[in-house]
Image 1 (spheres, rainbow, N blue to C red):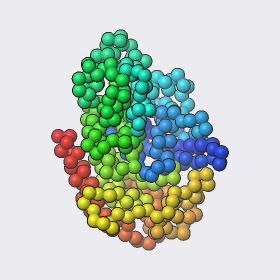
Image 2: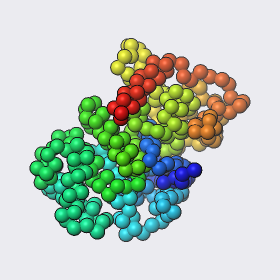
Image 3: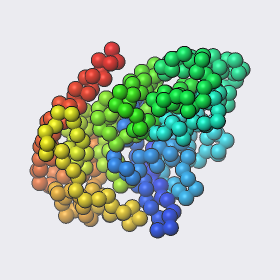
Image 4: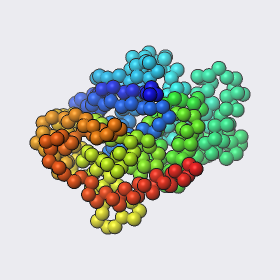
Length: 352
């Protein structure tokens, strides 16, 4: 069996605020396999970005890792000195940020910004770095790369700026790439192009990708496995087919039912009732219990363990306990299943 490229074990992260201690990430365990796309999905504030910023050791000063480890290449990233982390960031570990304008220096020409990771991490001359930068610009679809090499970020469209950020992230052929909602600010056409590009480069370079999103339609087209986060915890994880065709946690089902499709009828869209819990004083049981109409008494008293659904599929819900009543969570999901199947088929055809 191939060794995992990245392993997060029992990670908990707190933030100190004026209102109190926010328990942003709580006992998260994840494994990233070589060459796969692992999607982290969930509402805003669920802990997705905090988890990956802990991997990159880019947390703000008011954050504290309470417990856990992040193992990469036989080392715990949480224990490495800053100099070793700098050697990894942008080299073996890279990130694509959501907003390319904040990721790019507006005063620096884009070619120089793309060259920078090479000059920092590899023993290359400026001319060699320039040639590699031009090659990656062409690979990510920037037309007339030689002419545009000396342009500034403002001279590119939003979609092209995101391609530049992707080029910067991939220039050193990282083993792990974190994509933090990289298509959120883009229109549907550009979004599809960027997703296809990430998949293509992942396949060519063998890079493992953690893809953060709240858009389940995006997940259907790019992910191999999915981890569903809520209130700082992982509630369910499995293959993309496990999650879309056989969801087990009520929150996962709620996300699927609240996602619109192009061919939906009026009234088909459902919303998840209630609000997310306050993570200054998080619930002791299942964090989704107060929004779950199928909640059991034990949901408010004790966090459920992960129940095994299959060799690839696990969910933390007491509804999977042998003593729990049988409920039909997946009613009215058939239309969405067909929609996601079409998305996946379309992506497969694009790959071919």
